[in-house]
Image (cartoon, rainbow, N blue to C red; front, side):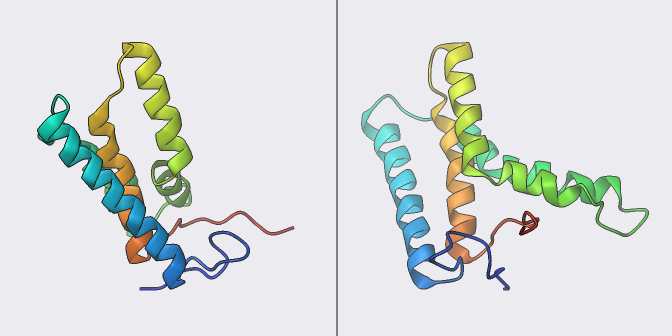
Length: 132
């Protein structure tokens, strides 16, 4: 598994043990929160949480299906992957759903957990901005 060296904070490579351990701790905290919420604080819809966890990859692999006849990854595929594998995108979606429905959607933490687990095991973003 290859991690791009220039992804992540400038002082810490994305492939470093510390960077991955931080995301691992966040992943465990999310899992712990969902279990706690499911057992003691009103419950969590497990099916919705699993579907949200799969959401990022389902959206990201849509370009593969759309371009399978050409047998090449479309140039916009990496941007779509990065958009749905980004904590900021998740946060904006979570807040928008909260505002619209006036209640937080706890199963959306499955999506956040997916992103943090990806970073824990070494998967980063696909398309990096050009350096100036």
